[in-house]
Length: 391
Image (cartoon, rainbow, N blue to C red; front, side, top):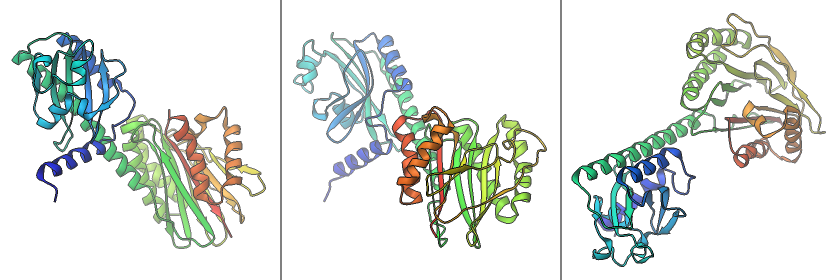
């Protein structure tokens, strides 16, 4: 049976992994702290070190180039984390705990070490903000308080990232995951945010034998766009669930215009209602312009736009268009972030057409298209939705 110490270590490592920070690239918000610490304390180096089960990962360093991974047993910060208390060693070469440490026996040796524990939002000790110097030195009580305050800066950044990760989970939970189970139809979607959360979303829900689907893109990125996105989704879902498309878009605009105007934002929307029996698709394209029907023979047709984005022009009316999806045809709708990986929209459509020819299912097509976002890196949120008629 695990001892209490074993259980504490399991909880500590689980909390570290939950932060999703291990092996991530350098970030200015952490680099800034170690640069300031090195300058303020006038030491050879400063680092933010995170302790996994068997290794130390250096998230940020100043004056310690090349320090990224070391075995945990070689890390002076291991002792800071184990103690869950500040560790101040004026002269490591004369210290029983550290005198045989590889950093201390190296040339030049680490003589001075000071580490302050870093805690996850749940209180678990996950790492250390540390200072090192090649000369022995003392640390005053005032300096120790200052190091503790700087460690608090790092902890607040860890907590902020944790909150963003949780917000990302909730935002993804709002997007549909279950198949609407319409005979002869497949649908799939995927949204990849430029940061943890973003302003894109996709949605679908059944109303009898019909399927309502939406792809929307709120201007901007990050938390402000995500908050607006949640409001837009709720309004669109409510209005289109209980109204015909022509009335629903008017009601949605009336509800959203004041909010978007106050926020100085707009949202592009493609929303469509499919009759699963006939294959007729009634749709509104409010400034989106990125919907295409891909045919099995490799040809395609772009769908028409209906008017400007929601929130862009007060009092506007949107045209309701319709099209017929034949067996084997696929409706593909993307957000403008998808276009960032191509020279122009024509190239993007060419790539999507080729991907459709190779994709056996709507889900595979979405995965192929979304792969561009993951492989190329994101400057903007990218969303892909595919609806395929199989029979």
